Image 1: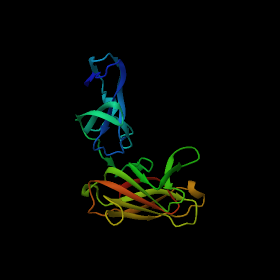
Image 2: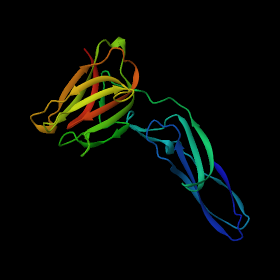
Image 3: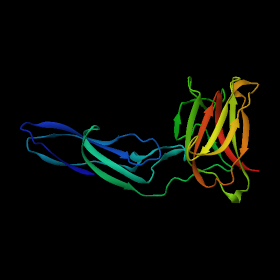
Image 4: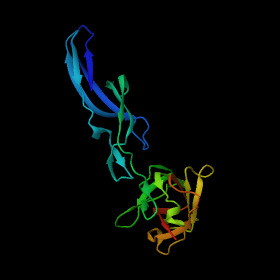
Length: 241
């Protein structure tokens, strides 16, 4: 990118020109503005200079929970230039082309609970004393809502399908996992309502609970999970029966 900087004052001056980028329609929670490059220059009165600033593709990358790596998603971005992130003087569109990230497969696969795209009212905890992560409602919250974008639920060719959850709980408090497609309670399609049994060894006593998946729900959907009570969720998976 190139930008022209002119000193319109009567005395020598120094300015820092910042170039920021932002994603306009990211499926992840993108930063409002990300500093990508900058130049600090000194100009004499009336001097004009053209600056070259770089936008490496890697500067547009974010951590993708579905790919398990830093990725650059295709789509529309914007370049912003000014003397600070809040004082933008110029903008320019930037289109990134390329293959979209593939959907996460649930049938025959495993979706880690910690690999959510959005989380409201939840917190990460250890899955075992040695390793792993799980999600549970945060202290003071009775429910936790999780969203996983672009999950492939399979189709008729897979035959009857089931959805399972790897869960635990440490108290006698009632605990549940509700799994919806394309929305939460009242807006989405309920795929499974799972009750979490109490384990004899507390919250490190992981159990697998399952329910049949509705035959009419197939293909790629966003999954919305509602965790209630003292449940700890390590993962969900799909299979056939």
